[in-house]
Length: 392
Image (cartoon, rainbow, N blue to C red; front, side):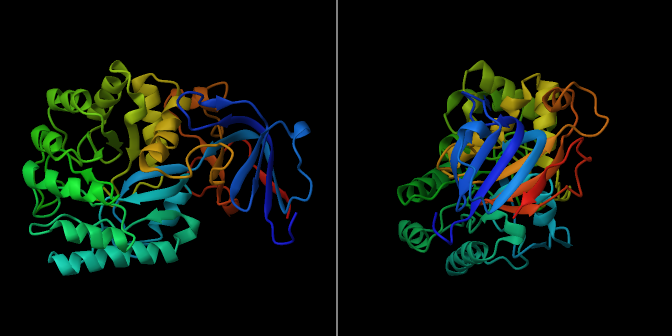
């Protein structure tokens, strides 16, 4: 092994959550990563654990892929003027989130709405989160909001500069399905993924985006299908699930009942792989460090689905839809993990049963790119058992 190689060994794992709907639980009690990538999964007795630079004793707790928040609104660094709050990204790390995806940096004071300015801001946002990862969290940012007058060459210039996302369609001056559809096509042509606002206005200045606009625009992700905050009528939500093949994004800052309806409809049409989770924070309702965990517990308990499936919504489903190399525990993927356990004194025979009853797990450790980023969470209830670094 080369002298510079970093080898991580996580042993004594009780159960591994894979993040994959087709096999949400996988056998093994040990995972190995070299230089930030998963190289081996299985039983410790069968694996080469020698020459490790870091050994973590999971202490009979559970290993999950790091959670992915599919819908956030960053501005700069680890600060949000929306709630005048610093270290909100670090707080979310303590809720198990290791990757965040911007739906637009719309809360920046004086956000430029001219085309030159919005392109400059998107490129700058992409750059500064590429160069600075708060507490190690992967923030995929630089998501320009569509404004009237944008032409095909603007999307090519953005893509050539490294921009890979569009902010929520409908938050800017483009609010008609026809105009949005043309711009979404241009974005898709150059490899830029799109998300559309769904539901009533989120803040003064935004507007209603109903099912007809969503279907005509044909964005890659139906952003907060359960509203951000106000949901569409039930028949429109069902229609959106049934009438297209795009991502069904359910968010914490939306209508919980509408979120359950969207999830149940996805199962009824046998397309659960389309369901992904976000928080839509920071927002008027604040920052939710435990928002993704709360969504997992809510959908599992009130929607009566196995919690290991709900974890897939926040990990593998999002990773596959967003074309990420994280979110799944599989050889070759990024070594982004959370180590979790049943909360102290929580009901249920184990962590999954406790979550199925609506309780949050305790986060004992987060790991990003094979590096320990946090230990016992300051935000979740305390876990029954905790992992520890036994060799470094």
